[in-house]
Length: 102
Image 1 (cartoon, rainbow, N blue to C red):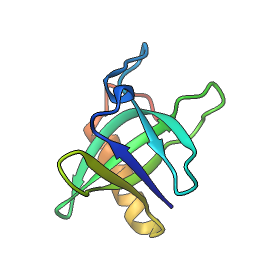
Image 2 (cartoon, rainbow, N blue to C red):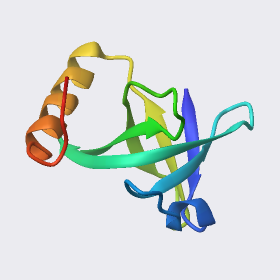
Image 3 (cartoon, helix red, strand yellow):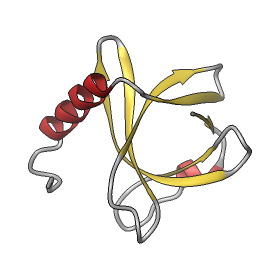
Image 4 (tube, helix red, strand yellow):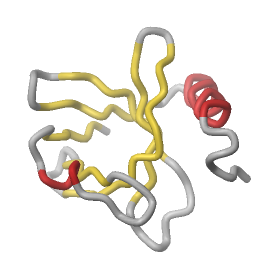
């Protein structure tokens, strides 16, 4: 699944009590708001670690970030379980002491 992010969209500039929010639009035109937990560089690519901005959200999602142009980015779902685990381990190491992981 691919989500699109408009860099000019106001949701990217919003903050809740925990951090920055970003509104992503899925392939069906549905907008979903996520909290940005962090960005990880791995193997010359950037990956966003996000959690849905919902009281029921209990797991993170990881997307590969791909720039389309100066104003738009794609957030691409990752199917490779090994890559997901590597990126998540890097994220945990990068944010150790700032976040609690279960």
